[in-house]
Length: 361
Image (cartoon, rainbow, N blue to C red; front, side, top):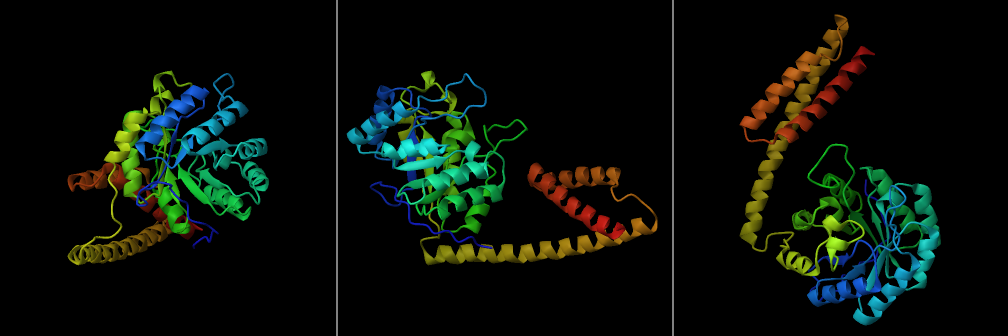
């Protein structure tokens, strides 16, 4: 089911309209000199749509650097006057909204710790009702698509038509190479639900380390995302927050100019014909897969009936462990990814257990 949002196009303000929207700037506004120096260098790259800076920083524990507050908004005014760059800040309360608008901030974004709370999002929506401002909504900390959509809908119903989502990854319990797991299926599903909604990727918060930022940025563009939000600091080594993931301005420029912009469709007719042929093959294979899956579930139901007739447990742990070991080994030998195979088998097994449990009554 599609979700109809009332949206206006978001301009990227770059010389080349083919480029995605690019939001860049330090994690935190630390001084006027720091903001101006970073903004001047970013302006020289000619690859920046909006200048971002954290004014209020939500922190897990007190005592960490939580931003300098209102004075940073005055610094951003100076940045805007001197460089002409439009500005963007994170807001989490109605007071933040009022102050940001008072100082002429062009873009407001709702952070991951705020978008998780519908009450907070609604208060923000009420405070910006009728305002001509762009609003971006980061995904909630945990991978909850409905919560993300709900936050976007609340802002949109307040009359905000310049609206976009920010994909910044999700918290995970397991250790990973990423600071926040990208879970790329989530923004893809969001795009499917809301085709007109621009989605901007935050590779800095996904990566957590500056050397991974270009890889994540390229992946986002390959998945047809509409922009990037990148943390850039004139001296990351002394940054008061997220020092490890911020790029120097020259490193940002090198990354942006090295990114590959892909075409949505092949340029030449013969290339389109070749792609269509491959897709037709995929269609045939998918039909075969689903026919086989339907047969498998039919047999699972027969097994469920057998277990019921003979008073047997639904979950046969030894059998499941045997299937997992053998099938994953077979898949690996055939060149398939182990984790993909494991997740697929777990989904199939879960459905089989559900069918058998229903039969058990």
